[in-house]
Image 1 (cartoon, rainbow, N blue to C red):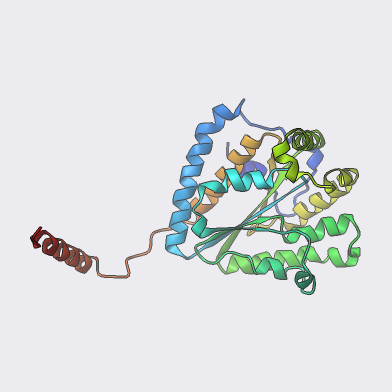
Image 2 (tube, one colour):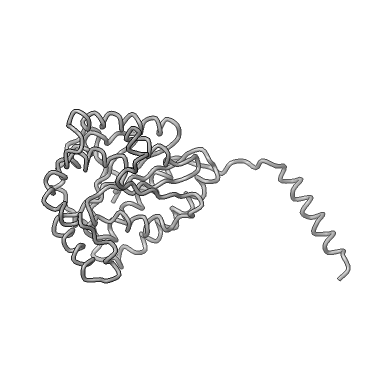
Length: 282
């Protein structure tokens, strides 16, 4: 199955999250059956990242959004753990600092976009400014409603300058979120993940649904598409995200750049040095 086509939000397309099965897992019945595909995409991703780094013409920005416990950290660990950290960065976006709040809402994100040849991952992103700020009335509607256009323009500038963008909404249902909260309570090694916001945000579930749906509808474009990824099954989430990333990187038709030196001359110098070394007395 082509997950790019299945999960991509069409520009200005209508999105109803409650009608999307968060437990979808295609033909796979378990992680074990999907593991060969997951590993194959991981290996391919490493090769394509190396090619992107070597060519130095494009960059890739990955945006991860989702409700609390949707699995953003899990994707970073299990999907992007396949990559060379030398060409990959991760930026979490939490409550703006005093300095960040003194600038426009896109300032802190623009600083973190990837350089050519690199991949950047946003754990949350500039979309927080049309989500939490909307749900909790931190700014009036006349402010946040204009931000969709600002975001689309920002992403278009990045795209036109060689940064390709993939945005993933990790879709879990309310029952799965509650189960993941329970796992954090039951496992002492996960206690550090527990937040006071885990349960205080639950009453706002419907308001967040409205905010996410409008975000997806307003800001999925041909140059920066959104994907709604069924994420109740963590392993399927990883499989779908990996396939979509590999397909995007392959579509760039990247090639290794030509050498910057005379290879024949370098080979001759190598052989000369080797012969000299062989002739030296022991």
